[in-house]
Image 1 (tube, rainbow, N blue to C red):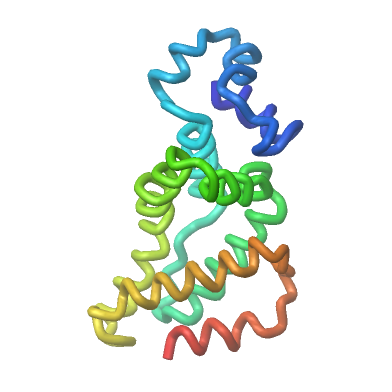
Image 2 (image 1 turned 45 degrees about the horizontal axis):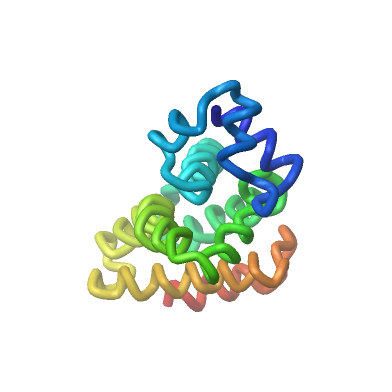
Length: 171
């Protein structure tokens, strides 16, 4: 089913993605798919998470600045080059008009997708790079910075200000 979903995402993007079409392509019944994924947002989140985890290792260089720079570059590359990454903005757009998609984004996607970057911030606080009570605030600032770039289609791998901006976040 995930293969059929990935194929559909590649062909039609998030807007053309539907449980019905995934079921048809996978030769499965809609109830079967809905049993595993209650909505199109949930199915997309599962695909996005598996693809992102496979594509982006969590670095551990001993420095939050270096870890975030590597991870951010990999994340931007994923958003530029991977099918799920390229259509990620569709989930954000749907979440602006659909309470179900917003709930999936807020309560499923965010906690799952922030687990890996949170590890980098936790390790940095353990190394006394900053106080532990700043972990959530710094993580939110990093997420906001990245989402600004994905939503405005500014994901250049040669972004000259990226090292400076990451350094500012790590002060």
